[in-house]
Length: 100
Image: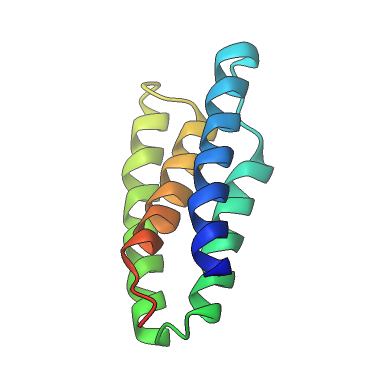
């Protein structure tokens, strides 16, 4: 129950902070991406997610990071956006985890 409350509050709060920060300063702090990634791993361990599934989530996030940094290299998005996209892919995938 507590893990669900953390998941449902932390992710939207961090995304809202990233959006407002990007809107005002045109930068996204690395702390936001790190907090999203750390919260995924903490909640995955709390839910006893198998290591293979954690690895699949990390692999999907790495694929998003490669695509996003390709966009960054072409000048289409910023570096913070690329890192946030990968952390979001990792973190938002955790919302599909069941607690049973």
